[in-house]
Image (cartoon, rainbow, N blue to C red; front, side, top):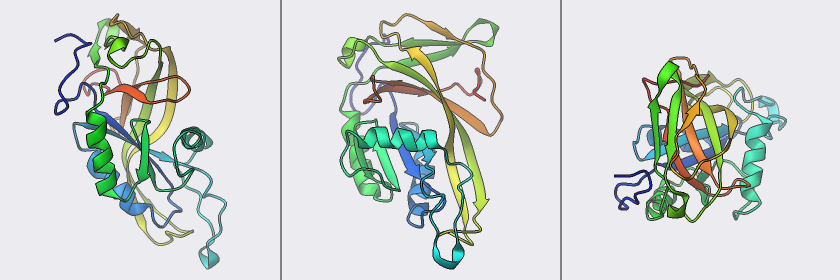
Length: 237
């Protein structure tokens, strides 16, 4: 089987990427975060949790405010870029599936339907392996499979799991459990969609961290292919 081979729907060439936009200050977000935790354990999904920062300055009565320790303006900007072309604007908890469709993150039935629909679409097959000197070798399938000639290549860093005792805001007094918390995204340039191998620099990551490679259409369009970094290979910090 070559990298460009289109696999049947029940065996996708690439996992479906589910991005949750959330905040520790949002009282309706914990159910969506728990659901993302379940998605994070599935082989057919790459689950990523993006904490936005626009909740940080909101005051919730006597509980005051809470600054989400995982939040960043970059995550908010990513959500706003999706909102520019997807319906329903910016809100939490919002899940974006393969950069194509969005759904309320706590509505599992709607998200599962979107995941099933995405499996019907062609995706690029990404092959990651350890090369010499600990570098990571990446091969991406032929872009004609998805009708694209160029795309962006991203390295996503995430923390596997963390518990936080919230002391203010809508979730005051709760202990929240978060999974696959995005801590940064690095642009790796243009994605080679011709199957030619690319060597990525040696990377390191802590035992409680993971990383993923995303191939995304220009201007934060649909996600064309994705893969988790090999457990035994180079790791992201």
